[in-house]
Length: 304
Image (cartoon, helix red, strand yellow):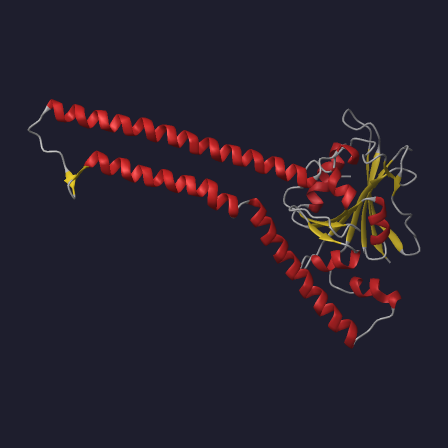
């Protein structure tokens, strides 16, 4: 749906990717410090030579001094202090308070928010318990438009082996336009199939793995927590994959479906839309052209 043909099996582990990026950053920082050190040595030599040359040119000329120390010595001392600060920043500050520290602080803030949500939910459930069957109704009663957005073939095919099986540039543009600026909820495999975090969107990842972590997403373990994590967001989107769409069907009140006219080999499917619970409110056709091998329709469904 979001324009990635990358397969899950070939995706770089998020922790490995972060380690590589941090290593590149450290190399860049150390290279900058080394360059600064070389410039300091060359500059110091140049100042010493220049000062001696000036003195030899006019021995009677008074050289400005402060506290009995010549000006060029002060320049070298100040520059040396700047170099020491640079070294401290590279080896101490950016090492101790670097990306790992920022990641831990971010995770703590996210966890605090989720803990507060859970505490409030416990109080509500204790004082006003609801039957198990009404949990989805409770989420839907909130003033939100929870939208599932997907592209599916004639038989509800979503993709095969971790990738999509068509290339529809106009559909990618529509997906970006609709979801930009919003929270997007997805499964772990869908998240890892991305080439990287989608710009200007907050990623919420649902996974059964209690130890799964990512600096680029809020990690939760069920749909209710995912929807609670969007906070004041009024229009969150559920973007896949197949299992997440199945979980989201009872919570969503809107579906933006791109129906691709064709049948495809697939191992992931969009859940069937029960037309007794949903109505088609708009449909826009898009034909085959030089950029689109398949015809497709933009369908908007709303819960009855």
